Length: 466
Image 1 (cartoon, helix red, strand yellow):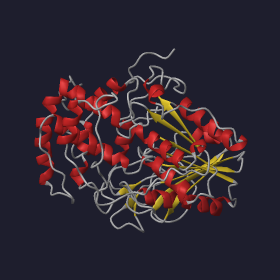
Image 2 (tube, helix red, strand yellow; image 1 turned 120 degrees about the vertical axis):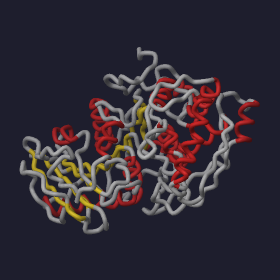
Image 3 (cartoon, rainbow, N blue to C red; image 1 turned 180 degrees about the vertical axis):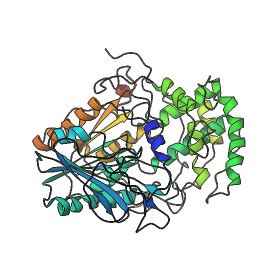
Image 4 (tube, rainbow, N blue to C red; image 1 turned 180 degrees about the horizontal axis):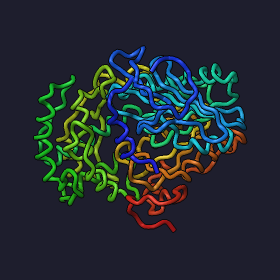
């Protein structure tokens, strides 16, 4: 099972540095990281080693190629019975450290077992640099041809979390290159993810009558302590305590209802997911705060340290805590008091800043998302589905809801079944089954997510599937 905790543990790697030359993987001791040739201050971790120091070696019957090019480490693995097809895997967000490293896709064994070769890049940078992820991932295709002597006759793009956005942007940037795509737990709504981080925090403040601000530029270090002080006033009124399961007040329950509607609508398991994510602490250096409060975009001026300005905007957002046809008096009061923020930067039409996801796929795209994920929420799927429909491409997108709570909380059978469904779709043209994620009644059904959930997700709490 792939969880947020696994990703967080890897992200704390110290800055480590390799050179631009391919080499066969072996069981030799790890070499010291080498300075990046393209990113000053960066180092590249040995692609022949896992981050825990274990050697990276070929699986039985396969051949591997590893090395560094353009400041990015890469791995390529080709099975003995190669079917002529390649999967390019894009990893997720790894924090803002200055060491880059490559790792293996979740479906490594399955790719090889079914005849697919795979390739993965560390990217030359960390941070939320989707554009670099797209460039380095696309570059693997030419590198594969150079190292193996064969051009793949079909290429599938796949990636998790931020790598899901890399996937979505790559297939729109290079529409003739890929035959299919499988993003999972992906940021398919580009800057809408950061709007959600804004929404969660400004509504919590408004509901608890705590005045907050939103710096338009990267604030001084002192702002973190100011924010901590403001959050310390917000949390008791909500019934939330960092590192402990919340005991929600009436105000906290209203906030939960607002967040539910901003993350995909009423759906099974949300109460447990809300408790899970409010028990979790946030990312360093704000890991003393409940998870969502450490993600407030005002802490970075809304830039995510990559865009040229604030990418968040809620001027025209109407927050709801109910599904009534007409807003309640309490909802009107909330919307009158919430802090409003205007964007100064938008999703980029190219590969700069935070690249835009048009939602205009020309190829089959099959995606999975946990309905309890409140880091990259389920609403990302709905945004992409809506954009695809607006472009007349609804038939090219299939989304599968998984009854998981963590971020990228999938079992191997869930991922394997999805990949096999995608490859069959590519080969036959027959669109596989998915969930009607834009139908609120379907999403609110107690059985939503049952159809494609395989195995156990221990932290997901809801009525059992029939």
